[in-house]
Structure formats: structure tokens, C-alpha cells
Image 1 (cartoon, rainbow, N blue to C red):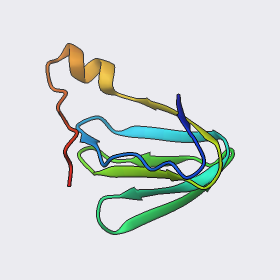
Image 2: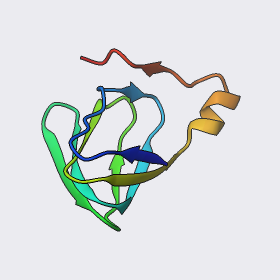
Image 3: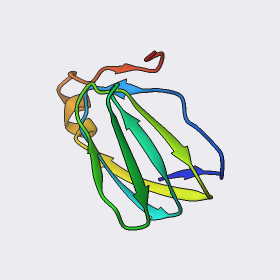
Length: 86
């Protein structure tokens, strides 16, 4: 889970795991890759595919729940991430 305060914007990030996001509270938007912007609010579901940059912005205090296939990728030594994804 991630708490995103109103007006907060995360740094761009990408990794080899595909991640499913479910906003529990709040609303905002996520930029996926260079071309896709997903507007989200409570109970929406969206997916960030493997190795696509993602950046989240909160319009109000928000909580994002996420899950992915990262544990199996780590167990197989396949997981990679890029936190300087500009």
C-alpha cells in the first residue's frame, strides 16, 4: 500500500514485474509509459505492464494498493528495476 498525500507526485519508476493497482481511497492519475494517463478513483483497477515507467499524482489524500509477480521474479533472479526512469 502507498499513501499519497494531496498534491504529491511520485518519481518515475519502472521494473520487470507487472503490477496491478487498486485505489482504496482518493483520486488522482498515473502516467504509464510516455503516452497513457489513467485517471483513477476509489475501487478502480489498472495495470502497469512490465518495464513501463509509472508516475502517480494524487488530487486528494489517496491510498493505492498494489500487487505483482515480483516475488517469483526475485526467486528466479529475474527482477530488475530502474528508479531513475526519466
